[in-house]
Length: 346
View (cartoon, rainbow, N blue to C red):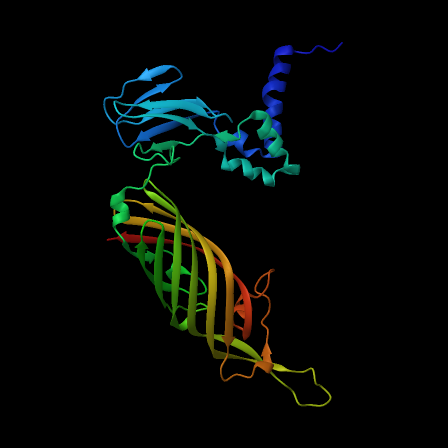
């Protein structure tokens, strides 16, 4: 006779089974989005608050913090002082982690997040400008005008000197145009090392970038940009050349010789980027960006006979990066950008 332990069965059904389903379906919002969250209400003037029937008299201009279960429905709050009254309805939005379910098995993560009702979230910070009637509130704190007033920025690329293919020292100058636009010009001096991609290297890289700031919030900026770059680089590498055997009865018996040759590279690229600027202090700024664009690359071996070039053996399972990078070429390719800068504003 089968005896079922009801408490253990309930634990399995309510705890173990849902946890297994969550792990199987990788339902991101259910796993990482907390059930409750807090929202801070910031205002341009000192106000009092009425929330869920309770009134808070605020004698100093301090933010009002609301702890609330994350739901689809907005929540209401009334702001008032001696001269102004403002009714707010704070909307929820779909948490960005919800879209990570696109990688779950059969997209079942979406279903789990719908059942758990964990896909929604409220803004962590809300700002109300009582002098503005067109905008009810902002879901972030606006950037301090002191930061925006510093229009110029000089930056140093943190990782460019350690690059494998084009090691360099890179400096940039950025100029703000108002609050939303900026122009940045960059210069890089190519460095030489003993690798196969920069031996006795000389050259430079020039770039011009037009930025649009999607958000100027508190102490950070989110931007999108379009950058045009030109790279001029000369370096050396060794290639293997065939030495034909002119013996008629043994045409396949060819020797090879290794020679160090000069390589000329000219790249032109156009790349859209998405970036993030974080103010570490009122002047020190950390900037990181990522982009995917198009590059035209032209590689020449001046003074060499290309017909006798012999491809080296594969360096790895995926191919011969060294030969593919340095061989004569004239084509378009995909350009990937990922880097960091540290800057100083003035």
